Image (cartoon, rainbow, N blue to C red; front, top):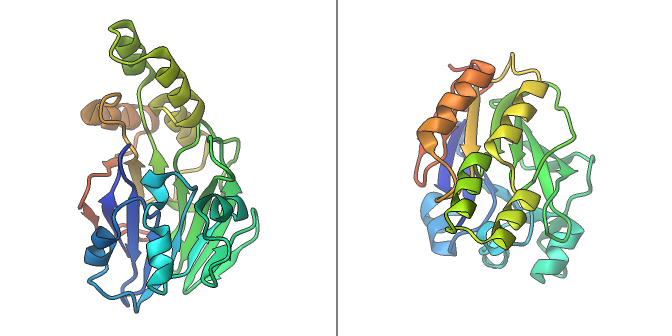
Length: 248
């Protein structure tokens, strides 16, 4: 399995899982449809579907375009209604805690804390990757997850950086408060990682870093110190091979 970061950050988010046989699963569609076409090699024949966490444009901009191109888009009922895609014949509704089959991928959704209609995180399983946790745009999570093999998780900001920018009047208070209510900070991310059994985890990928409220090198060092594991920062265009149950 290979994970390709099409885009990750405050402006746009889209990720692509590609199995060894070429089968693909899109996670998020928050970029122009042309970037997705390029990422999949201008052919959607082997794209099993697209998972969308919620309706905000930086996660769902291309959802309607994917439907028109014949790709099934999986999201909550609330997300489809908010996007206006609920009546499309390729729109697929995920119900929390119910496992669905998306090609060779098994997907299970769970609610998250964000200012959207019905936002979800996902547990994704494939024979090559094992169980992947995908969690973004959530202030926190009360769930513990069993049997994780790979983790893709938001570390949007550092509370220290955010407060410094408020003090320096670089960030208005209303924006600071919205960020805190809707996005996972580094400290909460590390608490969540510590609360779960990481003994079988191969890779941890930190996504959706804020341009102004994060620091890549410090985030990697903090995760290493907190859990004794290396983390990968998601950068646009990054290709992560061996996104499998084991490093090999």
